Image (tube, rainbow, N blue to C red):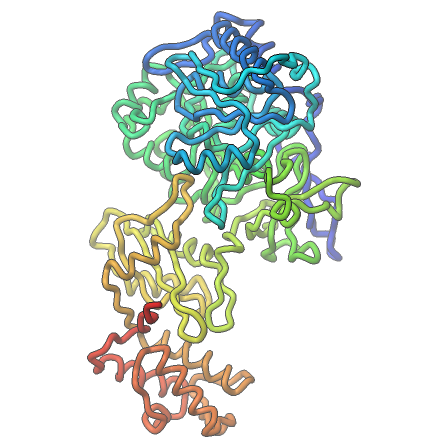
Length: 618
């Protein structure tokens, strides 16, 4: 296998020759094919090999292929063919895998539907996507196909299949409450899967544990790469995934070689599954959330022989587009880099108008073979996110990820958070993910989430953290002081609040609205120290004067402060800290530090809430 660094190339350079746009050529010999056809070919060559297994049984490639072809014929009788969508009930079972492959064999595209989706939402989704048939499992690899039979079924659909036809649709969360439907074509699926052959060459017999739901695109790697190489896909039930003893027994009965999961699940796996059940693992691929140095250290201790890989990529780019193999011994950064582009992918770090130099933070634009079709049934959102590649070949497109990254001196991409995690506090643009990353670097902090409260000059930040098990290490003030050494003062939260768990969705993302509600549930009262108050005073006075610089001990009257300025500053500070302030009191010592001291004393002696007032109802 070739190192990924040898062919990593730049097609745009800055004045000093630094790489701004990076890409890796497609894998040699990866001519376009179809993933499902490769699976059928591999299975036909070794029909008695085990393809799918669960605690209750296993199925050979011959059994799977027979079920796929049988179900595909039923689908064609219902008019399924290229660009026709089939809904697949995404159970953690072999029947779901058969349903997906059968849909592709019939020439159609499948959309996996989570078992918990409400009927009304499914009906709306089916109308929007033009779903013409649905499939549900009946046990084992048995399937029930639902839909109206066609009087004259077109059995030529699969034969007319083209690389640009739709293969599957993955549902992702949308800001409107209705899920976005990401369309992935056959050429995307093929190149994304084949690209893995550059880094990992499986043995003749191997197993992968499918930890992710089929409704999540993270399962695409486990399903297709395994079956395209004649491996065995081990499918745990939902109950087994929630029961460490049962999961450990499954892994002991069917030792797995490869793991692919989100970091939070892998952390749980290390903590709960018996160590002996993990010893067969030779590679762990993590993605979907930030990989921390702390988890890297725990991995090295728990599974020292297994390679650890950090993968990055949105659903819109077919699961992954960059990769970083964590060194065995070298100290890695925190968060761990997301690496360099995979074969056939490009990465552009852009300010929106131009590419930015290494070391500077910009938005990541992803190009290459993995860029999907767009959002099905949503041309407006597609046009906003899927853009012409100004630096690529004619007709090439890039996906605007919304992720903030930088390129290190070693050429590795480093993730810094989401653009939509960016908030504005007192004229400062602040990325919440960067603050959370600073908290997570501390040894005694397991997890963290930061939210913004209120708007305008009264805006402030709250940090919610989960401490490690060592109760003696729990010191909110000390934690805040240590974080203040890592980030600018204007990014510092006003208070740290200890909680047992950070609310996250099933994809591991922080649910900020639920986090924000914790403050009210806990009856949080925000008290601020003199230093943080001084920073607020400085910002408000600078805005009133309309200029800078001046120091925290400068005489503000000598700096040009007038009675009109005083009225504005007093009003802003009173609203900010919910205090009745008088100009004669607050300007008794006309410096930033002097004003801060007066506010802190007033807050301490006030019987009202010494922090920002709750916004009025309605």
